[in-house]
Image (cartoon, rainbow, N blue to C red):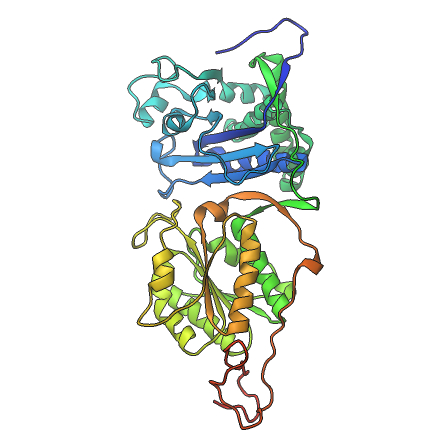
Length: 469
């Protein structure tokens, strides 16, 4: 449904406190990149943000089918927010499957932006639809904006020399340009990102930049919208330097900060598992800070290498999800029994057993608190938001080294892959808790089970003279 306005008349700009947009399409449509770039630009503008990427659980489901739908939801606001929102105000649907899977969540009267270029009979069949949602009344009650994005991006990039397939890969940035225009976002941040991302492939960078600009221009040239919208910067957040951060990224940085505050080297022994893998990946990039990472052959080996690192005097960390926690439980009991500091990060996902890798749940609480042999108590911390994961990780490190105990940190897929603005703490805000290794036998002799004022046993590095166990 197109709208018209008088020639030369600028569209009105409506102010909103908060807007929720959901980008939805095939796994290959670049919805995660589109959402991330919209988020990044909004962060630069000073909005408070909360995001939620939604990946298909199936391994490369057939293109155009309902199981293959990938989504990214972003909420940007001029006030302090804490969730990515329950109902989208805007749904961007790149194909019929994306439309029917997500339409039920759209608020009544919401905006639907549809790529009509992907609504041929074969596309409807892939989405298991007998009729066309654009004409059968399914979209009644919504404000529908139909755009043949496939054709528009082909026209915009006709002189780039790219193949038809390469041209269609740019349609996500054409779509992003439309949303930038609609919500009064500048193009410069994404233009610069594309130049850096494809620095070695300038033709691809230029094509995506051209598609982005064409989508932005479409708001005026093609008169698609009745007006534009604006969400002012958030003025209530504490003053400081902010960056956009994802939960797993914050957890990795918090673990590193915790090890530095303790004066220890950080060792992470982990086995890749969705949605925790990116913690291991992030930590592996901190080699200049002395971080050691080991991608073990399985979950049991992963935690055992971390326990060995703690025994040797490092801060041992292992990262996993629910299925991995089930496999690590015996070694967790060992770490508790020998009283070694260890941080176990459980980024929860749906279960039971191997569960649903890309679907979030917070169902491991009882497993974390009680799921070990006999009496094996240990502290359990849970982070509440992506940025809170940083402070939670530091607190876990502090408890682990000061009380000589394993500590479990609970996150989930929602927090791990979501993002929000994070105020960079000043160094003075991070209070050190340096470890004091025992190096000499105390009066009366060395007792490996002796207690300090925190009822913690002494931490002795193997090989320390006269302090053999």
